[in-house]
Image (tube, rainbow, N blue to C red):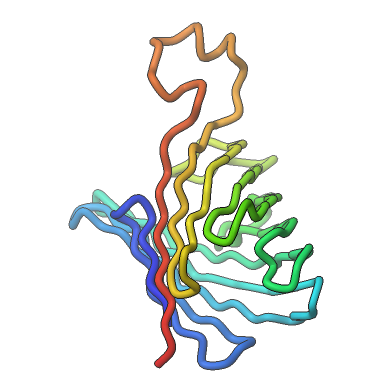
Length: 199
């Protein structure tokens, strides 16, 4: 059983009935707008150095009397450089599916590197992209390219705290042409906390 908090507001609760099957629900609402996701993840391979997983989800985004339902399907590949996989390289891909026919579907891609610094601390570097050649999703202007970097604190196996900065990839000239903001160059702070336990 696990529980996660992203930026305090976005909450996730999940349960793994077996070592290979993982179910979770993620959501946030201000009573006017909402985002809810039901997620299923299956571990296809979990060897000493390679981990492969497939996952799918159903998402609901709503607000101001409107609601959109769409799904996602994708997979991840993780290469481990040690037995506990505290230092690893991972790549992921996902396809966003909705009910509009004859439309090029949005696709997401990501890559991440985690490097163990000591028993309690790891460094994080991640790149993400969400693209679509046909039309934008109603609530996101595509394409979106993000880079994130930070630290993971995991003094115990039951919990982990990620502290990072996330920056949208754009030219410095584009940043300077607008109003100066504190985190335009460094990125926006991002905090995630996860607790895991056995029941």
